[in-house]
Length: 127
Image (tube, rainbow, N blue to C red; front, side, top):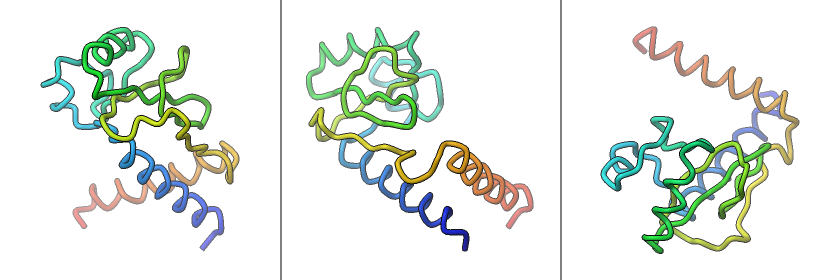
C-alpha cells in the first residue's frame, strides 16, 4: 500500500475522533428540526448562512460552531472561514485538527478522490 494512503486513513480517523469529541451535528434533518438550514446535506454551512448559525448559538449556549479553512478545522467560530458546522460536545476552543499536516493538499485530494471513486464504483456495480 502506498504510504500516503496509510497517512490519509490515519488523518481521516483523527478527523472522525475530533468530530465525535466536539459533537458535530451532521444530520440534515436534525439541523432542520432545530430551525437551521444548512447549505449541504452533510450539515455544512457556508459564509452566507453563518449569521443564522451564530444567532442560534447565542440563543442556545449548549451549542457552538466549528470552523474550517485551508485544511484546518477549529472548534470555534472564525470569521471568513470556508465553511462551518454546528456542534454540541466539547466546546474547548483550543481543539484543532490540521488535515494537511502530513500530506500536501494535492496528495490529500488525489487520495480522497481515489477512495471515493472506488466506493462509488462498488455502489454502482451492485457489490
